[in-house]
Image (cartoon, rainbow, N blue to C red; front, side, top):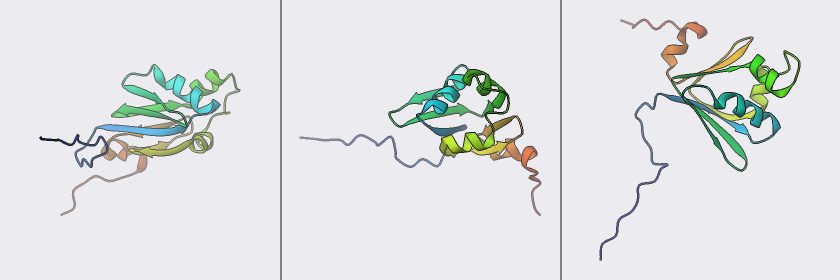
Length: 122
């Protein structure tokens, strides 16, 4: 009798995934944000009982005005503070701007927004 063990989907993997993402609370605000992001190219939404995963390839922009409109709220209702309040975790480089939050899979792509100097040190 032989047996084999299936590899865990949670096994460590140190290769770059070229992905970024956030975990939102599965509440009214999280559902609105997920609905706005659902139709964006390269974005995948996974709804779970207590959270909503929003994952993307390379980059994704959470545009506050789009979320305001979807929520039926006045401009400025959704902002970086509201985003942070409804997000429990993220992976990738996060950049908050006045009108959006951007997630980058690769830190090098965010360097210009963050003032990083990517020159090699000698």
